[in-house]
Length: 81
Image (cartoon, rainbow, N blue to C red):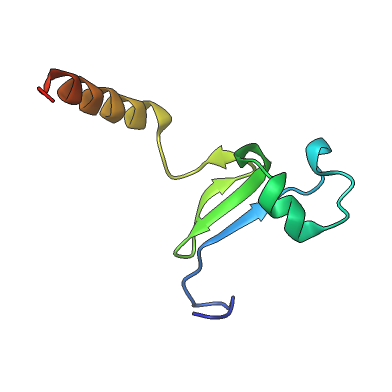
């Protein structure tokens, strides 16, 4: 915790700052807050494990996740609110 080193857990995102919507980059901090979108994220590392590499999910099966979400949706839709 507090540094990025081999053997330590890390949660990081890597942003591709070469994307057209981020050029030119005069103030990186301002760009992070006001201009960066999810599509600009190249890599995601959680607890030291790469979950997204080059913008593609590594750890998750999108079809499986969507099936779970649709099942939950159906259960919520049946519930009297």
